[in-house]
Image (tube, rainbow, N blue to C red):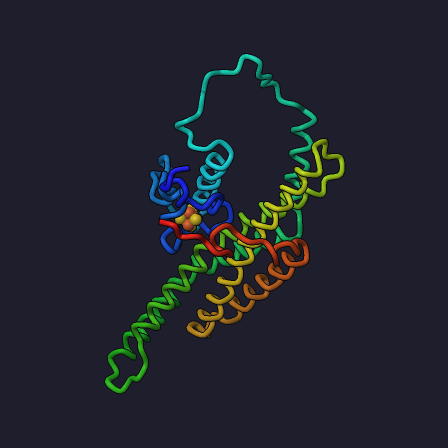
Length: 273
Ligand code: SF4
């Protein structure tokens, strides 16, 4: 393996938060170097550029799956395989639909969906309150006796809004993936081996871990916003309660997240560049 190949951390993008702009590992991430997904064109769908929209995450998830499973698509051999049987397997489709339905109805997914809706509605409706807060800060800044670092307060509020906006759809997507892996790993009539169940559980733990990290960061952001916007405290407390249930639920359903180490983010990385 060449030195330039060695610099990449294998699988780092599998359990990251896709927030490349804030990532310390851009130089060590193949996805980022090959094709920064967040800067790529959105195939005509303007929502796919917006990280607070599910279309963004769906597009990114497709890209990551392609890369994880098949490597760089430029290296694909697209010659049709004459032996390939493309008739859908009805049993498989039925089982697949049942697994997806079981995942969607799982209590963790319903909590995550509830959080996505409430946080999204809050973000849509918060503009007027945030502008009123901006006016307050402007007035305070004009006071010659103020001791506060008003500029820093304003920056921090912007940062916390960004955190909430970034993670509210991400949490739902990752909780779904974690639950889906868990449900599949527990499937009794699974025709494949125990090893496959183990791989699925491993992925469920990784997805659960990154969802948990996003929840912790979101809780920190909401606590800050609650102090900055006391008039919105009741709604914010409601969302904090949902997030707390979700993080406790994830810990109970996936105890393996405690020891799961995400490549790059949770472990020492040799920097041999
Ligand atoms: S690890 Fe994730 S967040 Fe970091 S550069 Fe790669 S895709 Fe972006």
